[in-house]
Length: 496
Image 1 (tube, one colour):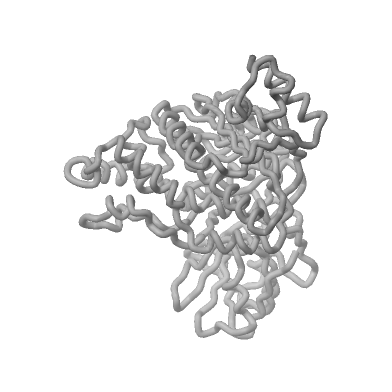
Image 2: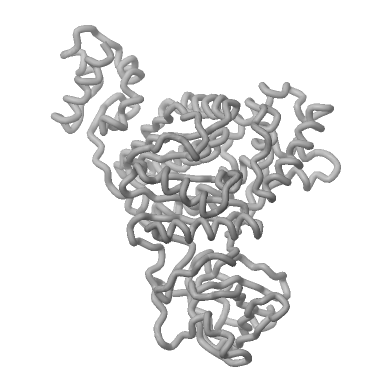
């Protein structure tokens, strides 16, 4: 009987611009309630190209780019300005922790064990190790410490894709190495935020999203399914059609290659693999091979070793035909080798959820609070699109030539590749133009700040700045170059 319903829905979708589920009873051999038909069909909406609204009317969805209307972007940025775990997600996580560890999980021996696991996970995190499996106590520790930050920081990358015209009204998304569902839940929340903004602005935009996942640990899959099912069941009236498929249980190294994905996300998973950065690139390439035009996001810890490893993986993928959309810009038209590159984004702090405050209510509470969003990432595409298409011209000096101009004032154009690495007295920003062989930093003593150079502070991660009249100095101890920005130095963020 289900095949009859599916075939009819497919026919109606092809022959009509809109139909109500109640109309299907005119053609079926058995009568169904509308909500029953909805339950039967909802897992097929994406494949059928159908959008069904809360009032049970269905219409055809044609895949289109979500145009980043300025007013929509402004509202999204406002929502993300003060990052916090959504209350309904916080309640889901709290309920999972309580069911797993008991109502008094934040006291006594249970709390002690959780805190010990948090410390050990942090050590593994910085070492790029995956740990020994995922028993429930480890998942709880992850949810308490890592989940909130990972959830919030990922939405800024989705915002970047939206602003760049890389999100669609009909999308298939793969969460590769999903763990307990951080990226999946964050994706659903982001698109629901977006749908709510469209609705408030009386814009008729129908969203159909399908999320697939790959995860090797059974305990993670159980948690993933529980959280996602409870999330979706608690939002039945949402006007966004979202399908979350059954996770594929497999290591990502040997998982079946997914097909026709629009977005593939590797969040804090490649660094856990016992493989070299170039070997990780092979894994990413294989997962992406079944999709014709995917966008890839890779996110890793911001520490020196993991960040440098990510750039090597990135450059290996570039040599395999992928293009860096962001954060890197190769403004002289040359590709760097990425062997000695360390860059990361600082997005600010999230508001700590109540469950994090509970586990941190002890001596050395700072050990159990994780609120700063600091991460390394890359967005890759198969096509030639980049976030910035700026190309440097003759009035600028390539950073690869700095050694010839020590103690001279020159003009440079470069991407800002870090937040402030210094302090309130001396501002330090890592910069790159794709030609550097040694690390290069723009140094601005606070007393030199002026209207001429203030835009250096305003540049976002990956933004390109033109710097006029900067003094070149060599730091031989650190094998790096410092470009001294004085009050007479002019800094301009480019618009390209």
